[in-house]
Length: 211
Image (cartoon, helix red, strand yellow):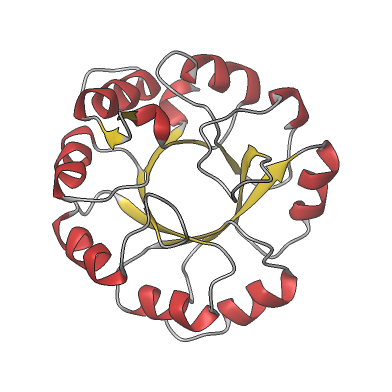
């Protein structure tokens, strides 16, 4: 089970981060285009994507962004998957899926979990994956805080688990929650900056084998 679990390192901001993930080879990385200390411009994301190992898929993280902007990043080859972290509903997702460049790009809908009902509501959305994250009134995601994993249950869609994950609790998360993938951001940082050694360790733990 552990070797099947996907791993995503989110919030890459520079070439040193790209070099680290190219060495570690997680399944996914995330570029944040929403308001955040990890936010990067589309131009920088394009530059970084050009240096990213082709075996790693790039996820674009958005919060209530204009569908046209998301579609342009897809069409330009900057991102391979779309992660929606705001109040995007069924109509938004259907409109996005109809736009040029988006066809075939999987969509991840983030759920800020306060109760099991939050997850059940999201299961009906026309997305490909869910991402279960801690609820926060301060920001849409990336808080580094966890939530009660017992609320996850067994969603009808494959899901990523996020929030407060680090090298110390990854295996516990896999064993208890059985997610499709793990999404790590602050847990792969030291002093707010992506840490090569932590990235390597995280991927090695999840893969259960030497890199």
